[in-house]
Length: 336
Image (tube, rainbow, N blue to C red; front, side, top):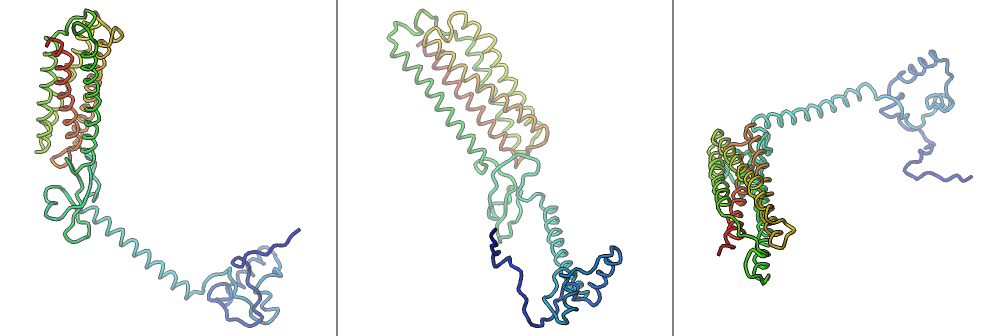
């Protein structure tokens, strides 16, 4: 069996072989304190002094050993330590009190309080008068608590989504024209399929395009803090969009399916892919509208905090613009 020595930092100290002063802590630091404690323990339990007891060995040998390490500090030192600890605790409490007062004075500083999210950045004092802001501690610099428009990350995120979806629609429409002019068929649509009906698509188009007006009014209204007009515009836009979707699914598609299916030929596949992909975007827009209306009824938007309304308005206008291209490509171009 081996007997490896412990590392130097964890070894016990060797006997100094010389007298040393008593330490400020431990039972030796207070007259009678450690002895009284040991006498009480012996009287209670009847234990003899342990042969390794530092106090017993000191009295037996008649010299001072290492300072005991398992006692209490002298009363004077204890008072000083308690005073120092109390001072530090009072300092922490004072700093917390100042932070609480600052939060009460300025709300939640850089957090939007129960409202619409946005990008938060520092601004100079002359530009911080339009939106609620708080001082940052740097002279002449303030931190806005809300942001909308180009200052909000969500605004740029919506533009990124719109750009991505625009490329997808562009690819589908380009595929439609490519197949039309490369098919070599005598007419278009091919295989004797009749040209698309125009009356119902034009009625649907008028309904969908008209839905952009109340959505735009709602967007402009919340910038002026008009909550009632915001809710009315969002509701009107939702109803018009739902009407368009209902006409497409319940009226137009049954008529078209009576003549051809997506698997009939390339024309049928592209017709249902393009119109169905646009219809999917209408469904997404209606879901965003419902979410925005719910948040509006909770009072989450005001003249400074409305980036969600802006994003929904941009998305809905994009859906309406795409339908212009779909109408011209799928419904009107075969008649030309």
